[in-house]
Amino acid sequence: AAAELGPYRHYMQKEIFEQPRAIGDTLQDVDAIVPALFGEGAEQVFKEIDNVLILACGTSYYAGMTARYWIESIAKIPVNVEIASEYRYRDSVPNPKSLVVTISQSGETADTLAALKHARSLGMENTLTICNVASSAMVRECKLNYITRAGVEVGVASTKAFTTQLVGLFMLTMCLAKVKGNLTAEKEESYLKQLRHLPAAITATLALEPQVMAWADRFVPKENALFLGRGMHYPIALEGALKLKEISYIHAEAYPAGELKHGPLALVTDAMPVVVIAPNDELLEKLKSNMQEVHARGGELYVFADADTQIVNSDNIHVIRMPEHYGKLSPILHTVTLQLLSYHTAVSRGTDVDKPRNLAKSVTVE
Ligand code: AGP
Image 1 (tube, rainbow, N blue to C red):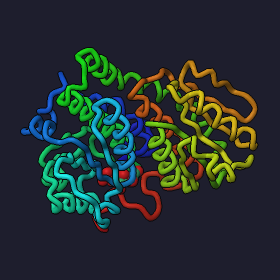
Image 2 (cartoon, rainbow, N blue to C red):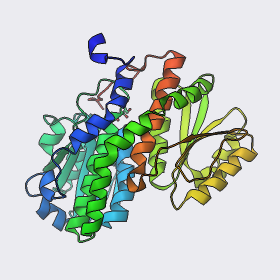
Image 3 (cartoon, helix red, strand yellow):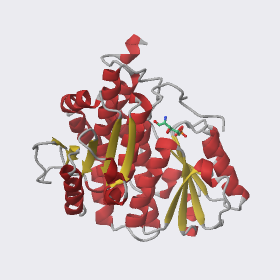
Image 4 (cartoon, rainbow, N blue to C red):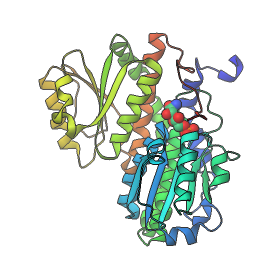
């Protein structure tokens, strides 16, 4: 195992650093945006459907939540995202015109498989999976698929599986947009260019590791943390909080920043670190006033800020500058720094990073 780990201390760290390769591989056969990328008959299915229902668990569910922002904004198709174990047991109104999308690293998660079967039992036959294991039950059970090429993920905490899922979901977004007549040739070209540049952009983001390590040291004695994001970065905040909980055992919660004043602000004291995802997007000014709300209560802010956000280091405001603003694909870059933060916090706390207590890599029982 030591040889396999190379220069890395844990599989999780190795897998975080493998992301440029994993994403490059996931895009390998993509020359153009064509439905055939999702399998035979995809074009017909994409033409027929008029909404999307995404089913998944855990980190894969957060990938689905991110995709909802993309699909509604770019493809203009309504999207619902549900936690698989909830969907399967509630009375829902089936829509035969739904594209049912399951997302799963392993393709063997019992809850997600059961949710898929439930959807089919309700007459929804247009099924597609974004999955990392080609030979899995999920791929066998779905009509269409997109196989991510993260490679084997050993660490229980999902890292490269998540970012490659996001790439697969962005491909799906573009494809749906194209079939529905909502993607200009110009847009297609520029999104493809951005996708292809991702490995380099992630490499630049990984170079922030020493700065993130310095922050991690400050998180070690903490028992709570808040993560804030807005819009398509809200699911990334959720993912950052889950990662910190899973491997460092620090209690963490994520909120869309605008929701702070509706409750969680009461938790903010000088003992509460607040991690902020600050992309340079149209919500930036609103986010800055949310940060001010925290700062005024003595909360300590840890801000991952895109270039040009004009957010600077000062008392109780720590800033790590992200290499570049990455438009619609920005959630992928902001994921990487949050992975590093939880990883190094956990290492310093001395937990079993690759095999956190009470958890299994693939949850094949209910
Ligand atoms: C993520 O770090 C978790 N270990 C977990 O939430 C995982 O994403 C979930 O169990 C779903 O697994 P799957 O993608 O293999 O279906």
